[in-house]
Length: 212
Image (cartoon, rainbow, N blue to C red; front, side, top):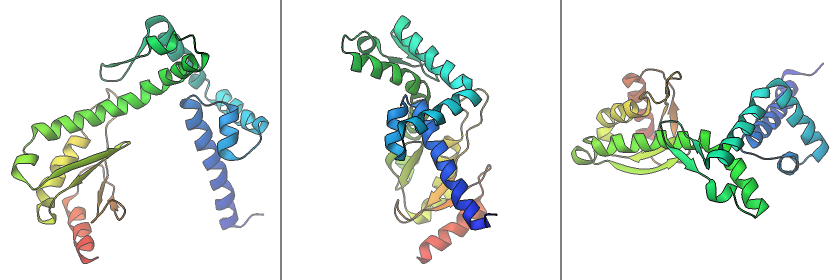
């Protein structure tokens, strides 16, 4: 029998392999790319892909549907009402460009929706009083996160405003949630995860950060 630590390590590896394979599939990678990323044989990579398609057949259907949309319409719809135009790429005589457009079709329907949500948050910040009333600076987005800078003494007022923008409803059925990471720089953040903004927890983190 495997000891607890050995079990954790072994299944942690399987989990990582599964996660990488799944995300690679969603973003249009094939067995060759998965094999290269994981450092395994192409045959084994293909078996991982086949297993995922067997358990989750909707993924393949989604990919084929997205590709067909791009071919027939020249674009794919994105959450929140925008579209990703692909007519030029999908009709290219260059097979590499055309296949790239097919991969982008499925990817855009997911990733571009995340981008739209981040743009909505940026717009809400611009429309708010943060830039006028506080020593606040919007820094940059990182995938599904946003980075901000402001004075520690203004945190108690600025953070609940920012958090309210992050959790505003975006999808019809899935609620938006957001944790808060606080630190003196992006590499030293203390994460606070909560469904409802917790000022007491934020105060505890601020005290800890200021001591460092």
